[in-house]
Length: 154
Image 1: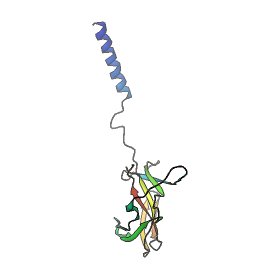
Image 2: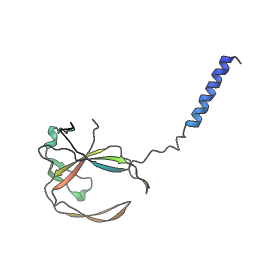
Image 3: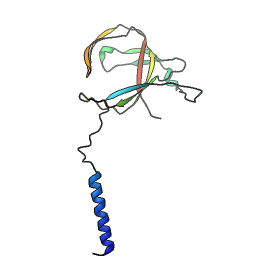
Image 4: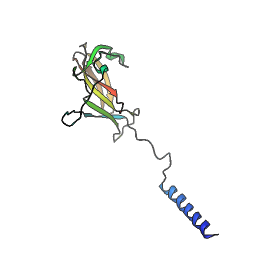
């Protein structure tokens, strides 16, 4: 075999060997189940140049229709503060260990706003998750609610 061909063959075999050592079988690399949300408080500072600019839609009256009918449709909700509505939290998908099964995979972060809605009648709801279960009172008499919307990642 010629020296150049031998050198090229040797380099090829080294590359193939390295790729076999460093590769992971596709079945062994399972995606991380980001199925929980972790929320962080947000702050703004004109001094530091960290400001939020709401658009015209931020002051619209909102009608909210829940996927679960026990919560009931609410009309006349408004983001707070009324003068300059802004998100107060960001919630982002996380993995949690130890796992007790997995839920639906989450891919979006959410910006959460405080809002005011007309008071309604409280209701009772059966709830449960991996940490426990029971019943809770859904507070509709309180006017303060939170609305979380998917982040656009501008």
